[in-house]
Structures are given as C-alpha cells and as structure tokens.
Image (tube, rainbow, N blue to C red; front, side, top):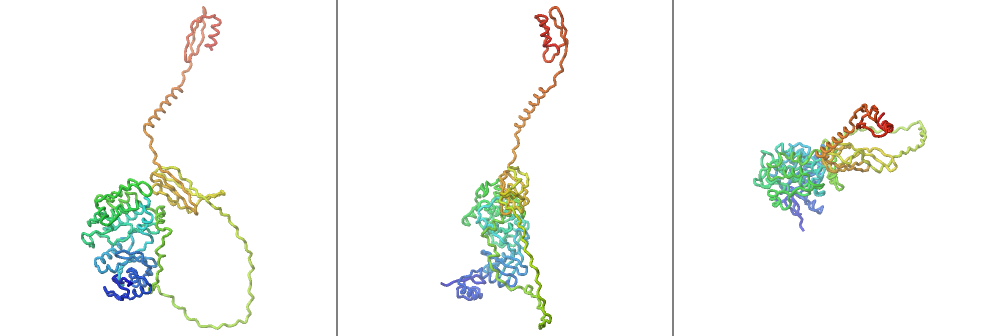
Length: 564
C-alpha cells in the first residue's frame, strides 16, 4: 500500500516516494527518508515542529507539541538565554496562503501583548523565521477547565465562584480596553498547578474600532457557548462575553452546557429557547441569588444583561481568594491528580547549540614547564598515629507517638457574623499530648464558614460545615451548624411583662407595713361594779358587753383573754 505524507511547507498530500511537493515545489526528501526509516507517517505538525526547531536553533530548545487546532499548534520550548520554559504558537502552513488568516494570527499576538493582566497569558514576542509565523508566550503548567470538567463533572459552588471571579476579572480588564474575546469557553480557560486561572486564545478577539477580519454575515465562535447575537452574525460587545461566561458557569455547576446537539440545532436554541431551570447543584439546592444572576447573564437581549461581566459574577457570589485559601488548595488538587503528568516531564528536550554568549569557556591555563623530581637525602619520619577515640553511644530520645488529632474551640452552633478560633492538639493512647504545628485547615463549604491558616473561623451564612485539621499525617474534624437566631414574638414578651407586674403587686400587698397597735381603756359593767382596763386593739376590736356569769369567774376569764 502506498503511504502518504504531508508537505513540510504547505501541508499538501505527498506520496511516499515524492521528494518534492507537486503543489509548492518544496524539498521533502528529509521527511520521506524519515518515514522510510521509522516506518510511520509523521503528521503535518511533526514536520512543523522540525521546521520550528531548525528556525529557532540556538535560541530555543523545542521539546514537543502541547496541542493543536485547525489554525495553529502550540509547542513547549526552553528559552536558552532566559533559562525558562515558554510556549510557542505556530500558524498552520496551510493557512499562510490566506492573507486574512495571517493577519488574524498576528492580530492575536498584538492584542494579547497589550493586555498585561495576572490572569491573561502574556505574549513575549512575535517572529517570522524559516517560513513560519509564530509568537512566544508564557507557559502555563496545568490543565484546561474542559479537561477538569470531563473528569470531575459538576464543581462545588465555592470552586465555581473562585474560578469565575478570576476569569471575569481578566475579561473585564480586556473590555475596559475595548477588546471582546468572542470565544469564552472551558477549553480557553487554564487552571495551573498553583490554583490560578488564566484566559487564553484571543485568536478571534475583536477590537472596538479596529479593522474587521470576519466576513460580513458570518457567525464565528463555538456554538455551545455563543451568544444569540453571535449566532445571528450580529454585532458583538462585552455583553456577548458575559453570555458565554454565563454558559460556562452553568456548565461548571451542572456538568453540562444548557444546550447540546448539532451545531445548527444548538445555535437555534441559543436564539429561541430558555435554558433549563437551575435548581440543583453538585453540593445541594441552588441558592436563589446564583440562579437569578445566571439567568440574567443568559438573557437573549444584550441590554437586559448585567452592566458588566464583573458585576454579574459578584452577583452570584464570586469573590477573590487568597494564596492560602482552602478553595485555592482544592483547585490545585483538581489539577494535580495522581495521574497528572507535567508537560515538562512528557518530552525529552533535544539540545540545540547554545548561543555564542552561552558557549563562552574560560581561557586555558598557561602551560607549565615539566620538572624532574629530586630524591630527598633525609629519611622520612615514621607516621604518627592518633590515639583511637572511644565511641560513645548517643543518648536515645524518647519521642511520643501520637495517634489522634483533636480540634478544640469549635462550638456546636453559631450565628452568621460570628468568629472564633480553633486549636489542634495531638494525643496518644499513653497519655502525652502536645499542640500541633504546621496545621492545614480546611472548610467543607467556604460559603458557610471560611477558616484561615491560623485557625480563625469566620461564619458567613446558615448551613452545616465540617472544619478539618491535618498535621503530621493525622486528621481531625469538627462540625458546626450555623443558624439564624429567631426573634422573640411580641405577644410572648407582652404576656411575660404582664405576669411580672401582677406578681410585683401581690408582693407589695403582702409586704405592706402593719399599723401600730392601739391601746384604749375599756369599762366593763359586771353586776353592780365597774372595772376599768386597757385593751390592745390589733385587727378586731371586740366590745366588752355585760357578762351574765358570776362576777369572779367572768373577771378571771376576761382578764386572762383580753387584759395584759
């Protein structure tokens, strides 16, 4: 069977025995010989890599291809002069004949070179050498967001908020400089091994007032993430990027974009249909503010969307995260999975000749005259041996073995706005304990409560959260429930106040002061005699009436009962 190869210059199809391209006349003898020797058919990008290696010899060491698309390929390289890894984006040879495609490729380099933002991949220089057009840019070690979503599915809300905030910051920076990306999608968002997010591929970006490179009436972009105005080939603006980022947010929270299918079917749905309602997330019900914010981002009318992409992400709860934030550590774990192989370890970099400044070697030493050894007339002294030192065994330190880590200071329940500190203690079964050092704190839900590296917890919203501490290979956790305190009803307060008032009145009546006893004389008529006595009247005054008994017995009884 006759094998075919691709032309190194124009990408045309060659037969196995062709030494020259019938399309452009380029010499492909080296490629044909390598096919015959290796027994495999190199792709056009293998040949482009060889041409790039030859064009940049002495300046860059080309390691290998990182990826390619229909318009260009990206190669990993080592900058010899600066001693650092870079990425080189090379335009496809088949596209160089189209003047508009070449202008678009160079426009990407010029556009990104003007955008100096920590979350936009920086372009260092643009070159044309060896029949190739390429530009050198910053190398990001990590994964595309698309690869992460394919592996993990939907992300937690806290992770999505952190990633969307950094992407929105980069897009807002570009929008403020009249640059519209026009192709915001997960494959153009990079997550590096430090947990940072980068926006890449401004290949179809549009500058306000710049020369248009898209044919009038042509729709450009990726259908699943295109705005309705892009699908209808209408004018685009910053609101178009906001719509695309809203689709990315929907994809991150649900695991799928709102619309899937054939390109034309998806484009029609983008224009006519409302996206499915966002009710359930990977970590629970969807908060109302998140659903409302994304629905407004996905509005069919650009004027009805948020005033800016950064305001839209802030409305759904996006906020910046620090370098030691647990959310950033979780993003790092999404990238650095057990099967993650760094790009720098995937290639064996072929060494290119170093530039002249790097090849400089120290001057040779001055030649020395040979000398003849002269025998000594004095016999050598016997060697003196040092006395042997006795080996002293080093004392063995007893190091306690800890098998448990406990967290102290975590309340069972708290209210939003509260703050408290946590302490981690190492314990062993034998009894000794010690405070843990170098503790890594984590929160299961940063939207409910966030924990700092020092162990300080800030309660944010109602819910349940698990606070975890890791130190010396041990792990401990504490669960905290966040509730909003319920206000007391006014009826209950009024009833309690009335009850207290009634009890107070009763106490006043019982403890009122008693009147002093009154003493007054009482005259009693007993028979024919009158007896005068002083009687103490307290509560009831009983008049002494005539007693119809014997005088002596009546006087005795009366005196005993009434008279002091």
